[in-house]
Length: 354
Ligand SMILES: Nc1ncnc2c1ncn2[C@@H]1O[C@H](COP(=O)(O)OP(=O)(O)O)[C@@H](O)[C@H]1O
Ligand SMILES: [Mg+2]
Image (cartoon, rainbow, N blue to C red; front, side, top):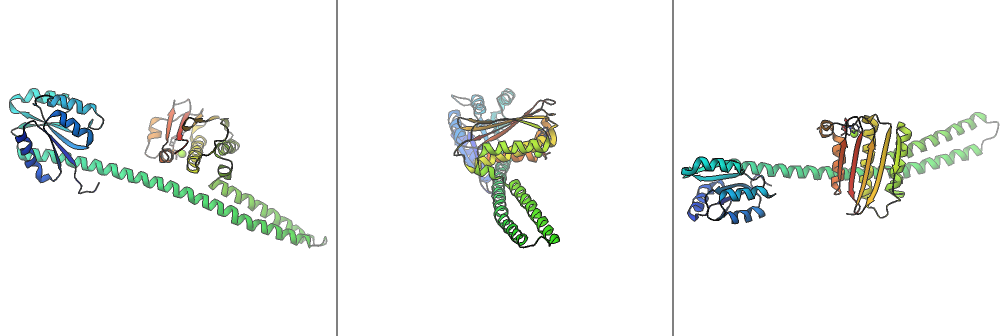
């Protein structure tokens, strides 16, 4: 929403003259003024529009203001919309109490004082504008996060491929050159022969390092064998590295899974294991992957110290936030549960098709 864009203000009164007067008084705020001559009409408008504030006459034939307010509160779209009652001086106290009971945030006493009306309404107009701006900026940040995730993923895949293919080729070439040299040396050139041997070993180590780096960036198994194999492989690596026992319950390979979806699941899984290694002090992890109707559901339980509410909602829980954003991006979600002292459970659900 632009700073200058308008918000909706709903005016509800059965008396056309009153509606007219309200419109006149509020015209200078330059917002969208919507008039409704009855509670029923007000409900219809509130169903179709986001409203900054509703000015609601208490006494109307048919559905009165209280009844209208009660129904507005029951509906999702108008559940939190500020309602300001317009009450006649004679019925003031009783009306005011009942008004607050059904969810009013304020009231105005007729005859209405223009300055009071205008300043009250403009408070709600500002509030609505700021909420809309906040919602929009949240949306933008979310889109940016999604974009960064995908750019980073592409870049990693690209670098992994480059390193693997280009460096791999050069190293293979080098290895062959060294072998060629070695073959042309005589047995009496021992020091040189030893050199070629150690050169060969250095090349082998470098090949392994290159493979390690490129796998770390993006494991080949994910693209070549699929998600299930990649999860199995990652769990085995994890167990080797940390000594934490992994029990796997995996389905057969899932065919036709979009690359984006398998990448998402795999990355979230990696992040979960990193947390287990870093924080849980667990001795065992259970990994369960299911291909349910329309969803892939990954459940990871550790038997560690557990995680408190404050920890996983903390502002610095960027790892957990990253998982949520990744899942959200493909229409999925991550749920974290824990009983302190009894481990942590992370459940990741993502759609199997998009
Ligand atoms: N499996 C786990 N067991 C215990 N605590 C955990 C676990 N996973 C996460 N946590 C807690 O939640 C916090 C937030 O996790 P995360 O967002 O990944 O941040 P980081 O790993 O960088 O600390 C961690 O600092 C840790 O206290
Ligand atoms: Mg983490």
